[in-house]
Image (cartoon, rainbow, N blue to C red):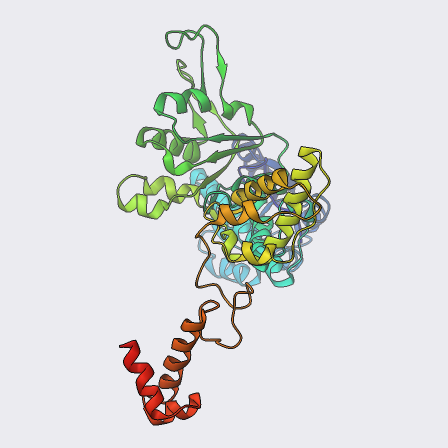
Length: 472
């Protein structure tokens, strides 16, 4: 599959195949003026040779030409490259020729002579956008179908064996090169910045990764931090300041806690996303930006939109691509891996030998809801290692940190407080609780027939009545 970039990412190359010299040269001058790198050929044979050697992003061809006509050229290029747009130019009144060319693989057509060059420009840009979208969808389909990552090292800092996280990696690898903005959602401590860094690595951008937490920034601080200011822009501005957008030029700007932006700051960010423009404080000249925006939030932005707190147009600009990171409690298979990693990390930072984990450690951790997610797990393990004075990690501080946070609705295959004797119990019951559960289950199975329920329990009907009476 050929490598392809969007119109905004590089100067696109167009191949113009036209036998009339004046028309060919006029198109070359115009297309060069509007930003294209132009190749030209006077017939289909030369055009095909240029296509195979130069790999243009888009082809524009006449239909009636000597040596090789446009129909043969269109059919050949369409067979060799499904992602290369072909725009044909047919004579006025020759609609049948245009229809035939479309059936052979052309994407669009214009009538000759070309009178409306603005229409031509829009058609070419639209075709390039369509080609890029088609290419990205195909790449995403192939990634998701074969399940293999092309760049495993981009996710090396993320410790996981979760199938759900793996699916997120595959999706990100597919969309990262598109340069569109990415919105990462998830609870606090789920690793949103690590994901943002992975997106930057996968994007292949030459510029740096620059991160900022937007929580607590008012409009003035937001503008000054991101856009910068000129000397004398305000009282105390004794020297110019380069904003983060300038610092992240050619790279990725990570905006954490995007949900905390004020309404005024949202408007400024929207302009940056829509137009790629920003205005430093005190400046009267608009600057262009080529940064890739990756945003993150733990907030429910859809709810904020409904409440009128967050702009819908900004939301839809931000989530061209979106991933929702699962909380740690939904990926329990990662808890042993993360625990071992954090034990080694804490021991190294404290200058201690890594203690051994007691067998019941993962049972306690898997039964905890972890409202602080991975960040909380790391803090708990670090504290336990710091307190540990033996070769076996003490559970005392871990149990104290967990407190009453053990879940009662954990799945049986997640933790060992599952009772195989009472599979209908949500957690391991007490003796009294087990008795009540067995009686209730027997009545359910017997459709409330007490004689049959007593038989299931191996007691008399009178004994069952007594138990039911005591239970009220």
